[in-house]
Amino acid sequence: MTCLLQVRLIEHLASERGHAGAGREGCHHFLGVRDVVGRRREGRIDRLDLIRVDREHPAKAVATETPTAVLSLQDYRSPPPRLAALSWGAEDLSAAIGATTNRDEHGEFLFIHKMVRALVLIAAKAAGVDAIETLHADFRDAKGLERAARLAQREGFCGMLAIHPDQVEPINAAFTPSADDVAHAKKVVAAFAS
Image (tube, rainbow, N blue to C red; front, side):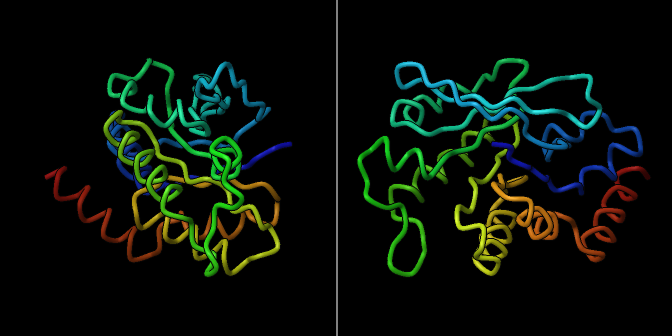
């Protein structure tokens, strides 16, 4: 299975002006996720191989999908050099904890899944790496995907996993800065340049 990933590009403005370290506090630039084969070893964290846009610096992302992985998130306060992102897997986490579902009757994540999602976001920010939202499993639910992607972007996630090509455009739309966002970012960059 191939998953696609798109990230917010607002930090690109700073990098265009020669601020190479600007992405550290913001979002790095990725093309996609390739060869998504989780290697689960005795409850250890699953890893996904990412491709950077420059294709010269392969990086690793950590997908948190087991109880042990969730309890190990604090270990990433001082991340390994190749760690680029943290993500989580609602579907596999449900299976790992014995839950029969991960959503309530309104389609919202259950408390335990919301908690893990928040912990991954906080851990990624503490580690200085990207936080990548889990996939929206129902690839036929375009409205639900758009809502989830916009919420993830507003809450600080830098991108979102997808399981179907039809999900790429709505995810890109949610994580691509609007004209107002770009104008504001240009003003901020100009203010720091002067």
